[in-house]
Image (cartoon, rainbow, N blue to C red; front, side, top):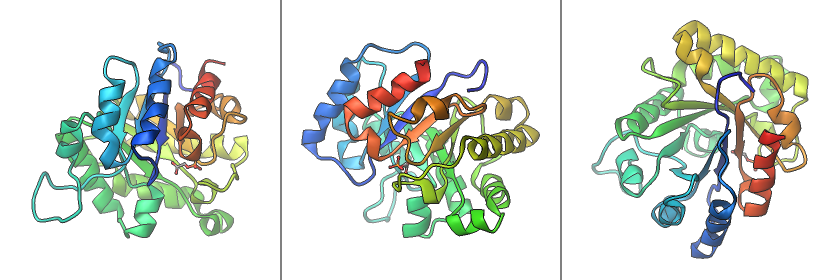
Length: 250
Ligand code: PGA
């Protein structure tokens, strides 16, 4: 955790969820509201409006999982940041490794999406992370450094941006880096963004993502410069998501 920074526990439902899943949103909202950290569920675009209605009046925020860089236009099948905001989202994930891999998104495209998020009044959750091969080759920091340089626009502020470090090899695999490796990468990210953005970089939230579960959350959240988590599979069930949130408070 970073002193003075309010942690964030964010869920990422990915391509999961139908109307029946809104019961999980309700269950998260029904839990006592935390004052020491924030909670967010990023859900498929089809569910944003209904989830936001469920969460209305609660501490839970609702977000999207991706957005187009443009406000509107001839982009069949895409969803703009303005559309997500209109549906009730307050944040959007950009540059998730599954987008970078499945859709070939470049750092420049991710940066444009982050700017689109800000334009629409959304918090941009910018994801970075190395592959297993890159880590084994000793290139993890240089890969993440390049992603940070290219994916974060100059206008970044700590209030409008969150960085999520998600080692690709840890996503959905049950594998988690050692606490030392997480600490080293988060310290590297903090140093990199502090050098570039000064106080904004010192205050930005840096989430860890990749196989965070109820059983390992408290240990991961206790690592310096880990300001919460981005939770995939374990965010689909309210009971697991809430148990992970308990890991913040100890
Ligand atoms: P996971 O996914 O928690 O299922 O590993 C994390 C993510 O992709 O955001």
